[in-house]
Image 1 (tube, rainbow, N blue to C red):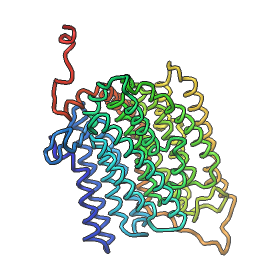
Image 2: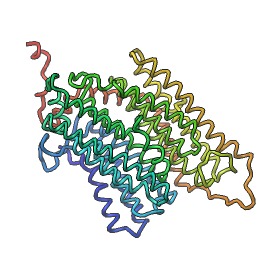
Image 3: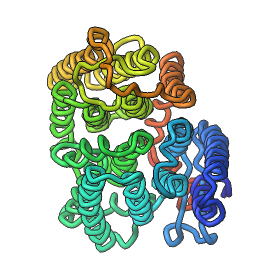
Length: 515
């Protein structure tokens, strides 16, 4: 048992009340502690990821209570990858919030930011479905506070819509948990995996209902059609740093589907056979089409980016829904890309707002700092649209390769390639209106000239673009790592033995099985 595993949850949980109680009226102190906390998270997350890189599974038993009775945190290669991605994203977002002054436009930004990190980290590290629900609720509470940060009627309305949809998801989650516990007597994921495999196929009604409910809950978090309606307005109206941090929140839904439906309800389990491809792939393909059509039709840059997030999440879900080691590896590669690209575009949208006063896709006079903002937008658009040479192109190739040879290949290839073309047109249209046609318009004599965005804001966005470049340069190594993660997910014996403390008891050597 390693005590470092609980640090990504405990550190922000302690920082948040400290910031409220000791530094409420001192924004400089809040910023210093918040940045220091995120830097510490990156170091801890990197150490945990390195420890898990060889396929080992670390656990932490709260109160020293063993599974399945106690609360267990699990650090395997998948969960530590997501924790590291969250910590790195958080640093870029935090630097932007400080540079742009967003953190000082309302109250308790840094405390809520830390609580948000606590919820995200806990969701990735928990080994228990009920505690996954608890961390989802922490996410909901903190994210609502962040969403309405700095106020405004439109932001409040979007926040209420966001909360209502997520409360529906929480209610379904509780129903699913109750059904699972009634059928199996446990909510520990490793223990569930062992017990679900023993259920008589003739008595599967309850567990099948529970598995469908769980899939619906995670689909709401991942914004899959027809459960995506909350995302465009919520993300578009949220403060830019908050929307950028939310880029990782939709990945919590994707992570939960990967974890639960490779460990507890894997494709080969007879009691839930057919649930994985019954509607998830069609819904993901429709989501992809709707997301990219939204990119083409958007009249504001922030809504364009929000629809692009729906499209990128749909690409991830298309890959996940194939449920093969190759497709999961491709999905995980695309998760990293999508998170960084989505966050960068939300921040670039705010750079445009700062430089021209709005994000309307109409021809206006050049924005302050337009040249640098245009370069960043060009890079972010290439990444999100999936054009070479950045990682979006490689990610889409991996998804197409995962679908090659399957009976769903034609549908996946046609919709992925068509939607990519539509997204290229949508981003090209937005870029030409914002940065090219603007040179034909001059500032009016009475028009207020907006200030140039802060240098730290550009540094934060440049950091995300730089990470995308590194994700491309080291694509071979990253994909090799995600391939090993996928292999571990489809052979979960090591995970189950580590959590249940039963080394060598859940699998037998082939020679013994032959006897």
